[in-house]
Length: 97
Image (cartoon, rainbow, N blue to C red; front, side):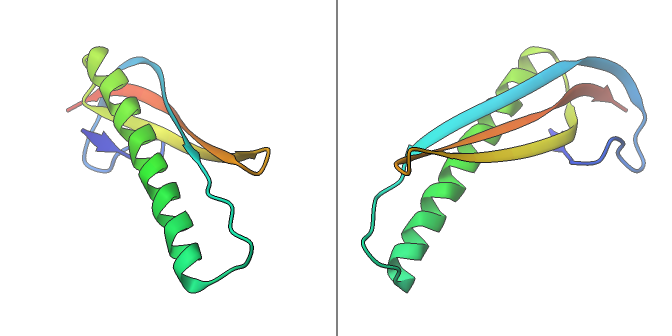
């Protein structure tokens, strides 16, 4: 599965547009009373994990449409109430050759 933020893939031709696909994930953000290098690493790891989960869900949704690539991907990260953050990825599922 090819994933890209661009609208085309060099060396490939889009043969069919399958539809818009998304993937979302949320994580509980642990509250820390002060910033330390260790705390920032934990938050970074949580955000990366949430982002990876969102990408995996998007890939699964694209595969269900018989796509072999997703183009035009955008990533949105939102914090809600200071306790949770949500990651949403959206793109267009396509078949390329």
